[in-house]
Length: 476
View 1: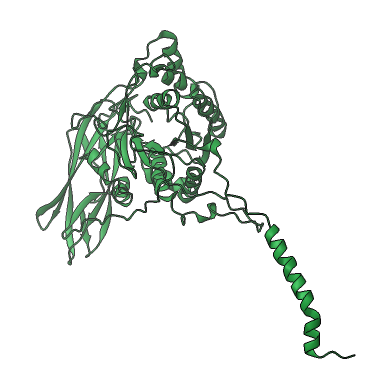
View 2 (view 1 turned 90 degrees about the vertical axis):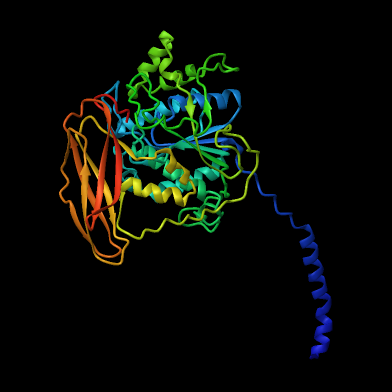
C-alpha cells in the first residue's frame, strides 16, 4: 500500500527520536579535552647566557655563574653561536672543523664543571674581524636569530646575559658583538606571538618540516659584560685609557670573585680557574698552573655587568634578580625612537658605529651611547693601518662641495685616496679613510681627528681614540 507523506513522517519519527537520543547519550559520554601540558621543566632556566665561542664565559662571568648556581640555586643554560673553529690550538695540530669538535667538547666539560648541562651549539661561522656586520653577514643572521628565539621559548629564562653590543677597544671581536645583537633581537621577539609564528603551533597535517609547539616567552632583563682592556688577566698587559675611566665602573651590578662561596668554602676565583682549565686549546694550562700554585690573581677581577633593559623595573646597579618574580610577564613591543634631524652638511662614523646608533634606538638601549663619549678602536699588532668608514651627509637643499681634513698625531700617515667630495641634496657619501702608524709595536693611546669643511668653514669634526696595542696585547 502506497503511504502518504504524512504517514511516512509518522513512521520515521520514532527512528529520528531514537537516533537523536543515541547522539545525545554519546555526546554526554565524550572524553573531556585534556588540560594543556606544562612546558618541559627540565630546560627551564633562570639565566640564559648567549655567547659566541667556547670559552667566552671564562673569567669573571664564570665566577658570577658559580655564585648563582652554587649559592643562589639558579638554573643556567648556555647558547654558543659558533664552534670557535678559527681559534688557536695550544696543545694539538687540529684546525678548522677538527678544532671545532675539540672546542665543543672542551666547552661542554668546562660548563659541566659548574653544573651547566643544558648547552646548545649553533652553526654560525667563526669570523675573525672587528666589524660586527661582517659576522652577521657570514652567520645567516635571520636563521641564527630564529634558532635563538626558539631556544628562549624552550628555556624560558628570567634573565639573559650576553656580550656588550658596542665597539670598544679590547672588546672588538665581531662574533662577540654579533652574538649580543642576536640576543637583544631575540629578547624583543621571543614574547611576540607573531614573530617566528611557525614555532608556536602544533600542526598534525604532516608533510614538510613540522611546527614546534612552543609558547611565547618574554625574558624580564638583559645584562651585558665586556672583556675590554680595562679588565685583563695576567696573560695580557693592561693598557688603561688616559682619556676615560674604566668602562663599566658604576654602570651596573658588580660581584666580587675573591669572596668565599658559602657552599663551596673556596673563593669564586677557584671556580673560575677550574672552569677555564678545561680549555687547553686556548690558555687552559695557565689556569691549571694557577690552581697548582695557588696564585689566582689573574682570576680575581670582579664581575661587572651593565643593565641593558628590564621589563620588571629595578635599579641599574641593583642585583641581577632584583624585581624578578616567577611566572610569565606580558610581551613588551618595541617602537623605534626617532633619529635627530640635520639641516646642514654633517660627518659621522660609518660601519659598525653607524649601525649601533640605529640599533640602540630600535631596541631602547640608547643609554649605551653614553658608555663612550668618544668612539675608540684598537689596532692589531700584525697590521699598521686602520680603515675607518665615514659618512658625509648633505642635509641641505643645494649641492655642497666639501673637504675632509685629517688631523693626525706625530708618526701617523694619511693614505686616504680622496679629500674633496661633491654631494647633491640628500646625498650620504660613504668615504673610506686609511691611516697608518709608523711604530705599531709601541703601546699607547692616541687621538685621530677629521674636520669637514664646507664653504670655507668647519661644519663638523670627529674624534677617534686609537689604542696601538703592541705585540701580545690583543686577547681576541
